[in-house]
Image 1 (spheres, helix red, strand yellow):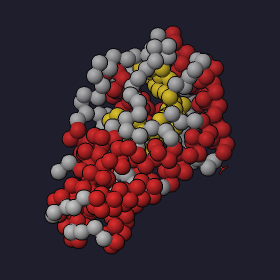
Image 2 (cartoon, protein in one colour; image 1 turned 90 degrees about the horizontal axis):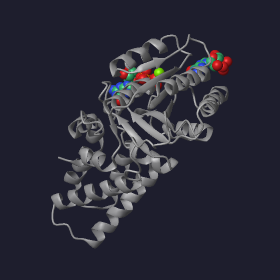
Image 3 (cartoon, helix red, strand yellow; image 1 turned 180 degrees about the horizontal axis):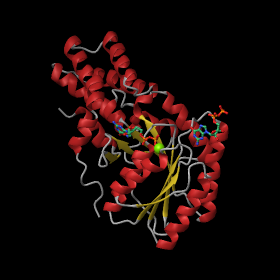
Length: 315
Ligand code: GDP
Ligand code: GDP
Ligand code: MG
């Protein structure tokens, strides 16, 4: 069973074009311009990394490593220096992001249906990601049911219906304004009666600072757990890559409230700040499972730190 075979490395490269331009291209330009590692070089490098949202901890590590490398090793020319700098940045990215912590598609045998709850603030790409996920699980031979527990927004049902249709999966919904936890409950019952393999629950976007809405999320989770002990098996937090450092605040708050098990970083194609993908899992201790690189149904990729870094640095 091969998942995501419609998705290629080149698509990831395309999706990272803006981050590559702001990060790798700027680093290479810096190397061409200065040709040697001195204080002003390191200051400028630091600025480039921070502005791509690589994060302070990872940036400091990169600077320290490069200082050490050039102290230990003589480089003859700019190409050698470029190779050293790119290598050190890649290494910190791959190590710091935890590498590939787990197979995002692993489904334990005793989890049937396997329940994924999707949370996050408004407009980050939850519904789109659910459509993409459903499509991929369906292609992998799973019977998928989506639960439309975003009962808050008027157009939410319709939007999710369109995605369910594209993915070719079933959807459970109720009228706008109904209790989202009740929709989640219905969805699991329906999945059990159909012997479905995967349930994906959409939720309304909410600000991480609104405590009543965060409580509502807890309730949805609790009700899911009552209808199927052990569920939800996965709580995915969706964050928009262009949000910058505020994404960290969002993630912390959602994590505290419901205990997220994985992160999906969307809209990488639209931002030069793709560095957030690399720093967030270290800060939270939660892996990035998927990245979104476009609006189409096949624009979701399992996160692979090595492929991600290679897509950034490959020339
Ligand atoms: P939700 O409010 O969190 O459910 O967000 P939606 O799924 O409705 O998405 C909000 C907008 O973001 C839509 O216009 C999507 O097409 C867009 N979007 C979602 N993921 C991506 C992505 O990976 N890349 C791009 N460019 N747009 C995305
Ligand atoms: P207030 O200004 O703090 O009273 O809150 P709002 O006017 O934003 O919303 C009133 C109620 O509508 C909230 O208590 C929520 O139950 C609901 N609500 C508002 N915005 C959202 C949202 O973005 N998501 C969800 N799920 N519910 C919302
Ligand atoms: Mg939505």
